[in-house]
Image (cartoon, rainbow, N blue to C red):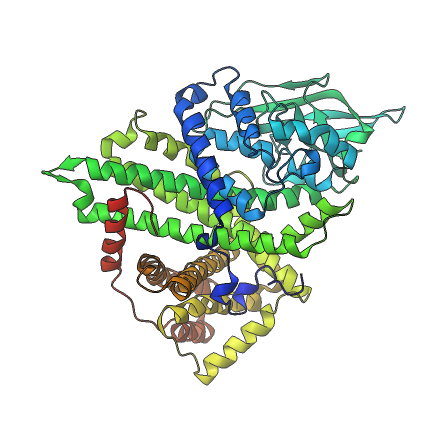
Length: 584
């Protein structure tokens, strides 16, 4: 682990392009998993989407069991309990491909992620043996019960109680959970409750427990094929052996599971966005106006290109992070009884990157499906066209697994906490940047220079935030949210550029021209946004001579020449139209 980059360290150092994982590094096995999962989604899920959306009786279980037969439910579960124990790139590929499956992605994600990973990572051998094999096959359905009517983002304020029975054999659960995926047919609930009203703890609750009941199905905007209900516990008896991990440490389980959930959701978003672009490019090629396909119109080209650029960037971020997680898993000894907890701790190292992926990818997906509807025109507003469903389904992505607002606040908070522990050189690097600016040594050349400029914009602005608010900075959410955006976009810019540079080095410039064009177009368009956001933030943090000095320093950091992004987008749009889908 000592040789691995620390979470968030990309902001304070340069990364060698050869050290990151990219989709171009897929092995033959990875490509086979990609084809198999996409085939399953197309042939088994999309072919029955109308029935799925109408909640046809038994279809969800049938599909889960079909996924189980292919090994898709057990990718993160060890062979000892019937799973496939795949590497993190393979599990990312599965999550990406499942993104195309609409509401089934939520059902299957609830099954393989938050509904089972608490047991995988924190369960005893007996708990794993009892529950995981059924999860793998799809014979048992898992659900995750954390959210409450009065406790959404503030999960630790949950009011569900658990009291030990007089005979010491059971915990008695009372309370209500809200918006629980898979709740209608769940056999296994991961439930969070407070023992004696104050010790936040995790339990495994059997779905057929006496006193457990579910409310009516929520009438949702999207993901209509998945079950979402409230779950009530009325003196539900939970055997003491079903207490998960340790009393009072439910937050450890919850937060570690959310890290992986956020990352997987970003991968889901990637697959969904590719599907939306595929539908839109095909439609633009077929739809004629004024005697020519609308794909030939400049403003439609702009849309197709920008959709593809955002997908390229999110793909670069997702698989770069997947590579970090896989390297982390390789560095750990998870063979012991506490192997799951060791793995969870390892994944936690990249909690920052998981949050960044979640925010960027879900918001990029929102953009892509919105433009997809626009390209379809009036037909995009019709439920006869798939893009209408994708538009509705995508909206929830920015809300669950921690709202994007919560994730934004977490980013500077995590950076400050790690810097205070000495894990990240935040204060030192800000001081070094000030010295460089004062010395005038800030030469910027090409996109590589702009990658560093993006980081410097963040550091300069973060330094001003720390100077004014110190450790209380996260309490000022308007500022911390903007700082998070600067950090996220710096990670996005660097990931896109490193991927292109690695491809050029390994394959040559001719074969990788499209990757370079996408990276350059994104960087050119984004640096100006970073500069404006920094100006806005600095103006809120300082005034008078101090502000003038900060803005002058910002100008020195952001000197750059803009590229002809219109021409780059025309090139990208032509490639997308020719293939009728996302292509790099």
